[in-house]
Length: 261
Image 1 (tube, rainbow, N blue to C red):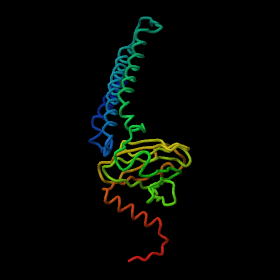
Image 2: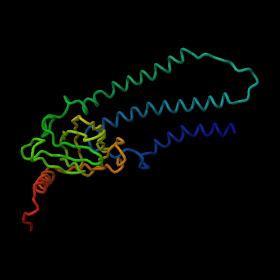
Image 3: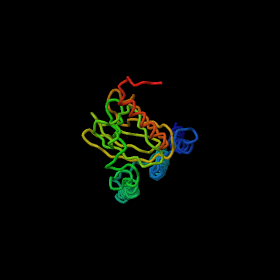
Image 4: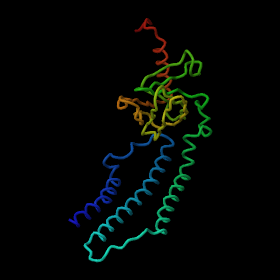
């Protein structure tokens, strides 16, 4: 049985490496990135993946060797040890250095995506002039756009359930809120994820480079209906976005008695 156990242990790193090496061609990997800062997120992911992957392989191969070497039948008396301080210092220092490296490597990307002082300011939308407010609640998404006065929170605001429509190729700044519990705004194609916290208004931004419809999911367990809290982000060219917004305004303020052709 000893060779069987050793073989099974050896299969763990082999299958692990094979799975990650072939994940993309089997459709097990990330969806295509369509946001401007998505590439930075992917680079950080691959950096950590390589670090963890190499550590995983070394650890598993070491485990296989220990099982192979120390599982043999022996006649001599077992030797007792209280540990090796140099070895303990090494396996404490190396992870600490790697964690510090990751911390410094992600600072610029984190600041660009999360810090308000680095938010885009040259486009139509900014922290002071967001395109919309996305409100999460059990178990839906509500998107509120400013009306003709350009100010959120006034009587001419427009609301659209479950679908966040934005213009393509523009820096889109919006506010994220929660009506009840913690939710999480997650669009995999944008590499964008942010928790929505009760009592807080959290600014976010992205720039979608490709028109299309993308899944908006809640990535935080928020109650019994969490599974059905699905929405969409629809990216349109500017002309189509303006037409959609005008149609939304017409529907929102319609009293149902207007003449139709």
